[in-house]
Amino acid sequence: MSEAVAVHGGAEPAEAPLTPESWGKLGMWLFLAGDAMSFGGLIVGYGILRHASTKWPVPAQVLGINLTAFMTFLLIVSSVWMVLALAAIQAGDKSKFNRFLGLTILGGAMFLGCQAYEWTHLLSHRLPELNIFFSTDLFATTFFILTGFHGMHVTGGVIYNTCVLAAVNRGRYQAKHVEIAGLYWHFVDLVWILIFTFVYLL
Amino acid sequence: MSSTAHSQNNYIKIFILLSVLTVIEVGLTFLGLPKMLLATLLVIFAVWKAALVAMHFMHLKFEKKTLTVVAIIPFILCVFLILMLLPDIYPH
Image: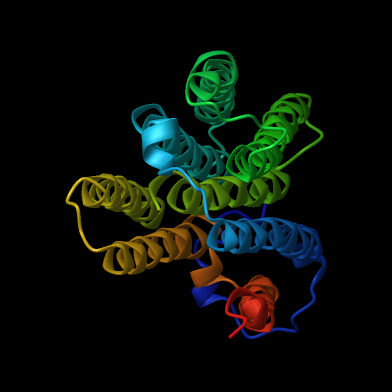
């Protein structure tokens, strides 16, 4: 097992940028770069529409940030559990790996639960109260598109991580596969950090 | 083994830093700062946090340069996207 290669990458001898070990990671990074452009386009579009709009509510007053600050915390914690799961499987400790990846999946699922609650609350109570409709107000349209696109990524990540957990336990996946899944999961966390700031706080 | 313990310790440190930065970010919004200053500070904090996740959790700090190049390209393209759209944002 080529353990801890990533952690101790600094000590690696100089080598060609493409090695069989890095193909998977490179593939995931290329996918994430494309995905980042999708999010980038949506966030930039959000900024331009918001700037050009004459009527834009203060997001924090409409959305409330206590729940979403907690959701941010959930994703950060779940990212930490993911790196700890990777460290555990690189050290060959399978039960610790199972525990931490299980917690990672749980964190993602809890995030989705919070988001489902948030959306339900917004759509059935908060937005009608304020006379904001997602079909006509750009504020609501951009909000649901951005958080929805991200929520789909979290859903995908929870499914992906569950598959990785199962595949590792059946002996089909090793540490390198966990590392690639980790890249995706941290990316989802990273994007949420940006969305939390741009959509909720600004 | 000791180096594994070290890197785990590092992950926890990054986690604490990320949490503290998030608390500061949320706290800033309650201070009633001027809009421009608040926006600038929030963007700095957000980019700082995103960089921490990419460098440490996604191991970019310890990876080959190729991956860093791949990771940076979308950010450069997004800056271009904003620059090219500026005439639309400020038409005069």
